[in-house]
Amino acid sequence: MELQHWLTAAREHSEQIIAYRRHLHQHPELSFAEHRTHDFISSVLQRAGITPHTVAQTGVVATIGTGERSVAIRADIDALPITERTGLPFASECDGVMHACGHDCHTAMLLGAALMLKQHEHMLPGRVLLIFQPGEEKSPGGASLVIADGVLDRYHPEAIFGQHLYPDAPTGTIELTSGPIMASADELYWTLHGKGSHAAQPHKGSNPIRAAAELIVHLEGIVQQRRDPLHPAVLAVTAIEGGTATNVVPDCVRLKGTLRSFDDQWRRQMWNRIEAHSRVLASLHDVECTVEIVTGYPPLVNNPEATNHARAVAQQLVGTDHVRTFEPKMWAEDFAFYAERIPAAFWMLGCRPPERSTMPGLHSPLFNPDEDALPIGAAMLAAVATAWLAR
Ligand SMILES: [Zn+2]
Ligand SMILES: [Zn+2]
Image (cartoon, rainbow, N blue to C red; front, side, top):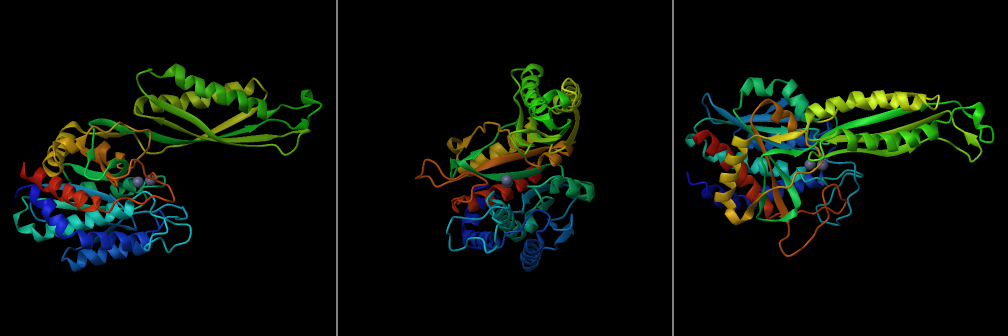
């Protein structure tokens, strides 16, 4: 089948895809609590004659087609703890929860792809595995749970593809790049225990605020010192908490921060450095420092072969002029866990209304993507999967 046909088919389904999206948008659920979302996905699949299987508690997987070979397409399904302010007629009915990262659209596009693939099941040269994945927005990441549930081992897909709405590009464009495109993201928590005293008698205590101030400057400095200047990395201290009065030196200060990198090996070396340097630097102030590092998602590295495949498909669907290079970002994305295991490609789907030059970004309470992007994304998923199996 001509790849272009998938776009025609998706446009025929676009009313349905948008209806799914609006329903999901109105009923968002937080990471790992996607119960109604799970049931909605399952019922849509069942009505289409596709058998859904529950994974990772609130996730759904299903296959279309038969045969030894298989390829996976994935959507994330969770929402964020944000109070929506779009004023849309289908705005969130759930107080303080919003699909502000476009996962409602991701889910609707995968459902749209499922309907189209089912209609053409007889001509599929293998199996397409659909993964509706929970908990992208929250550590440890639903992808890691889907993998732990044995989904990749059970269906052994040769490759996996996924996409994200991208408000920085106009509808009708697709951006993608081979290699590392998103960063690892680890959570850092420091506790500095000193000794409180009267502020007028600092020599009788050990001030954890002084230690914290030097530690912040020092740590941001070691990132600059210890990385190859050509490789980006971020260490940001983003919260500091301690003290109560102008005349009291407190006992304890707590810091929070994030460490981000495209280089997994460097990142692991930094964990040790952060701990050692924090302990030593605090000790110069007679302060005891403990560091907790909560390991986040690894860097997302697009496989060259899978990326070239997705690019070639995108060029046929939206035209060469509308397929661009994605500038890597220090965001994080748990699709990275799949990419660690099998060839993977993740592309960005433009969703900014073409007549506008900017729009509210991801995680904004005003995020309102152009729904004309949905048939394009649904067609991409179906076309990328079938073209992979046809190779
Ligand atoms: Zn997000
Ligand atoms: Zn997202």
